[in-house]
Image 1 (cartoon, helix red, strand yellow):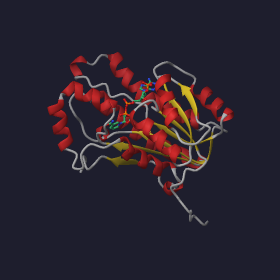
Image 2 (cartoon, protein in one colour):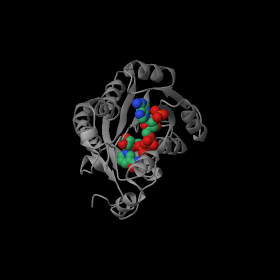
Image 3 (cartoon, rainbow, N blue to C red):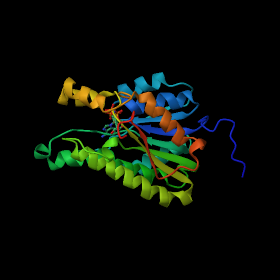
Image 4 (cartoon, helix red, strand yellow):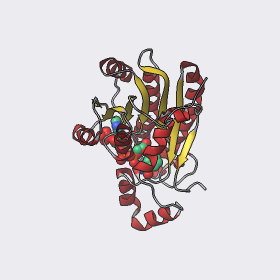
Length: 255
Ligand SMILES: NC(=O)c1ccc[n+]([C@@H]2O[C@H](COP(=O)([O-])OP(=O)(O)OC[C@H]3O[C@@H](n4cnc5c(N)ncnc54)[C@H](OP(=O)(O)O)[C@@H]3O)[C@@H](O)[C@H]2O)c1
């Protein structure tokens, strides 16, 4: 088989579903992928902010789908409908997530379950929906969001760390099961990237603590585009032999 592409990183004409598209990394991923020729279905809860993202996309044929991963929703049903109304999917990027820092002594069961529903159960529902017959195309790619917090710990992040560890385990199991269906499954594991999520963390821990955290990143904090380029790679034919892995994009934090 000749696997030489004129541009193996091209996303021209691909239909990609991007969750978390109303903010931060998900928004930047959507904007970047559209600049590379992809048609995007934008997913989050906040309609005005999704519309802001939509205005920033290049090209045509983009769509908005409003979904709340905390309310039981028929993810399989709406994904099937969009794949029929717009086009079957080539990719799924699940950037929606919450960090919700909380010391263990103050963490209620409902707080814990909010983190797990948004970060973990949503990933299960999306993977299950995406692999339905006719919803995705052969050679498609799923990219979930882990974090360096899947591999190390910090105070007040037990729920977040557990959720990202679960995402990395899901990626391995799903990659093996779905390989025979022509679907690759990976995740990116970013260090601290400047977004609203990190603004919330800064409000909580204070500017001094954020400086200490930044010093742990030899290349400094990242920006959303640093992660969007990694997602581009995992979605593209350049990564056709890559599945079941976590791509660390962390400015050297884990090193
Ligand atoms: N920023 C970092 O330093 C960093 C580092 C490592 C990993 N990550 C991971 O990267 C991903 C994106 O993070 P970010 O920094 O871009 O976060 P962000 O700016 O806070 O954006 C989070 C996104 O998730 C969506 N979301 C949250 N709860 C939702 C729900 N119940 N249903 C549907 N959508 C929901 C939000 O949209 P609505 O509010 O409109 O619903 C928003 O678009 C997350 O998985 C995060 O854990 C981030």
